Image 1 (tube, rainbow, N blue to C red):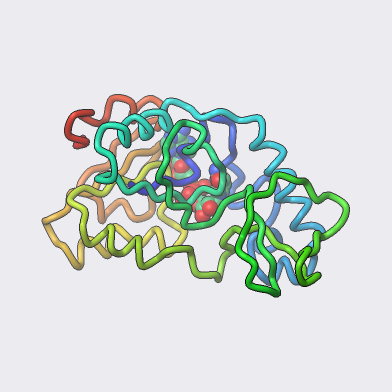
Image 2 (cartoon, rainbow, N blue to C red):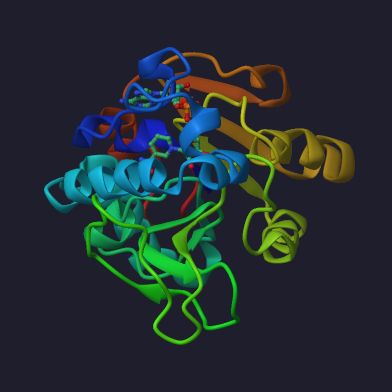
Length: 230
Ligand code: NAD
């Protein structure tokens, strides 16, 4: 199961697509690349502080809740991988969530190997510094040009799955957008691939089926809760 920004749209969190390629009125290059952070770290921290502030007040919608229920039914047969940095899957009750693009409420040091840590503080004025080494802290999110977290685990899950469902992802952001074609090439007809979202994604050709509509309306009725199949 791969979720994208579209699953959080009905909770009031904007997707990239909503903004015509902008993220909350910001250019992706400015707020979601290592180069943008190198150029203006204060502005980047202001952006993520704003996202933290916004995320503090949002609630999971029926799509997040349906996936939490599915996990309760089928346990670790569900591998839930999200491209989202928001915490809405966890707030819905999902316990095992793989955040391939990191998490909004985690921070890490750029300079030392102190592990990433949970943080809900807002940094509007100053770029925070590491208590250990004094180095610059950064949001623990994956920016364009960086390698997503836990790719080995993801490819293992692709290797093992017999059903692959993507929810609310435009199919434009790689490597996630390539998972479905990878399955086609490596596992042929062994895996059923289903897309759920408002419109056909850019990689629609690689899915067996696209179910078009709002995630919050489609997901609660999509799965047979006993078996986990749509
Ligand atoms: P995207 O913004 O490129 O595309 C969102 C997709 O969701 C679109 O195809 C749209 O048709 C669909 N959609 C919109 N509303 C929907 C609804 N109610 N139900 C179902 N589908 C709906 O998103 P992406 O492919 O996930 O790529 C965006 C990247 O931006 C990700 O890497 C992510 O890390 C980051 N991002 C994250 C958040 C978040 O954490 N919530 C928000 C914006 C961007």
